[in-house]
Image (cartoon, rainbow, N blue to C red; front, side, top):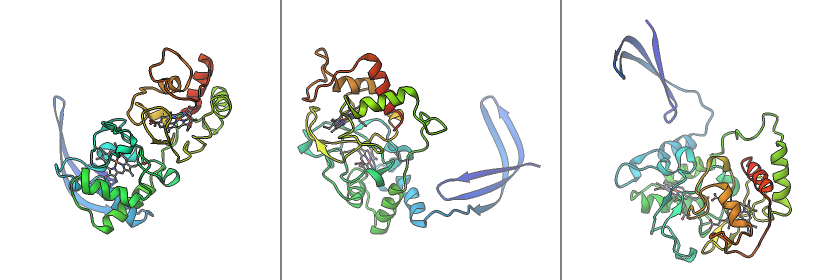
Length: 270
Ligand code: HEC
Ligand code: HEC
C-alpha cells in the first residue's frame, strides 16, 4: 500500500494519506485515500511572517470574498496588469485612469516612498489603505503588523539571466557600461535595486516614483500606465527618435541597435 503526502505552504503542515485505489476516467483521475495524520513542518520562520503570508493569500478582507493581496501580487510580485483605484490613486500624479501593479519583491530594500505617486512613506499605512478601501474589509492592528512583516520578508527568487558563477555575460557587461555612462540611467536607477527613491516628471504625464528594476526579466507593460510593452519600448522612450510617440522628455540620448540590445541584456540582470 502506498502513501500520498501533501504539503501546505500556508499552514506549514504535511498531511499523510494511505492510498486505496486510483481510477482513471478519461482526463479525470479519482484517488481514494484515507487521511492518516498531519504533521506541522519544522520551520525557523518568524510566526508573524507566517501569519502575514496567510493573510496575504486570504480573501477574507475583500468585500467580494474573491480577492486577496496575492491576486494582483502573485508570490508578492506583480501581475503586470493595470487597476483602477480611485480611493488610492493620487490626482497629483496627473490623474491616471489606472496604474500598473508594483512588485513587492525587495520592498524592504527599495521603499519608502511607496506607490507610483510616492506619497506614502509607511508600509503599515499603505497596507491599511488596501484592506480598508479596495478590499473593503477591516484588518486588526496585529494583522496589519503581520502583513507588513511578510511583505518585508519578500525577496526576488534567483535570477535565471545571471550566470551560475555570478559574472555578467559580455553583452551584460557592455550594457552595464552604457547604463552607467552615455545612457545616463544609473543616477536615477542605481544598482542593485535600480531606484533612488525620487519622484520625478520624466515626461510620462506627471510625477512618478522611480520604480525599482528588481526582476526586470519577468515584467512587462512598463511605466505607471503600462504604455511600454517591452524593455525595447522603454529604451525607445529614452532615446531620441523623431518618430517616437512616447518621446516627450528633455534628456536625449543616442544609442545604436547593438547598444540597445546590450542595455536590455543588462536590465534583465537586475
Ligand atoms: C486589484 C489589485 C490589487 C490588490 C488586490 C492589491 N494590490 Fe497592492 N498594488 C496594486 C497596484 C495597481 C499598485 C500600484 C498603485 C499605486 O501606485 O497607486 C499596488 C501597490 C502596492 C504597494 C506599493 C509598492 C511600492 O513599491 O510602492 C504595496 C505595499 C501594496 N500594493 C501592498 C498590497 C497589500 C498588502 C495588499 C492586500 C491587503 C494589496 N496590495 C492588494 C494592485 C493591487
Ligand atoms: C531622471 C531620472 C531617470 C532617468 C535618467 C532614467 N529613468 Fe527610468 N524611470 C524614471 C521614472 C521616474 C520612471 C517611472 C515613470 C513612469 O512610470 O511614468 C522610470 C521608469 C523606468 C522603467 C520602467 C520600470 C517599470 O517597472 O515600469 C525602466 C525599465 C527604466 N526606467 C529604465 C531606464 C533606463 C534603461 C534608463 C537609461 C537609458 C533610465 N531609465 C533613465 C526615472 C529615470
